[in-house]
Length: 188
Image (cartoon, rainbow, N blue to C red):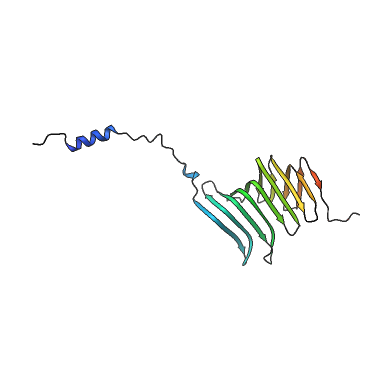
């Protein structure tokens, strides 16, 4: 005759002596996990067989639940009807809202227009950044950003704030404006 406890009783005692505490395990909100991550990516917008815009970057994360794409170290180009680059730029980071194509850019933004012969640098230090409203075509710096505009003719102007309306081609600078800007218009 064998002595001892039946296997089922030993199993129950062993399991009841061990507990699994799931409350101390950190949980991840599924909305905070990107649906798609791309490294060294390139995306182009093509219409009628010609490239309109091109974007490249070190990393892109798509968060469909937030309706946003987060970009790191990216560059962009805009092309004319002949395929020549008419404007280009780069930024350290951006969040693009996929429902509106509005964007929030952080870090330093550099952009230039060969058509206008103008280069724009926005340094978004602590708290500084840029907001882009796509439908209105308006770019606005937020507090903490410094703006530097340079023109091919040597003109240079700096400021601590800016609103650029690309629909009307209006530029408004704000706070601590310094520099010299040559106009292309002849005096009357």
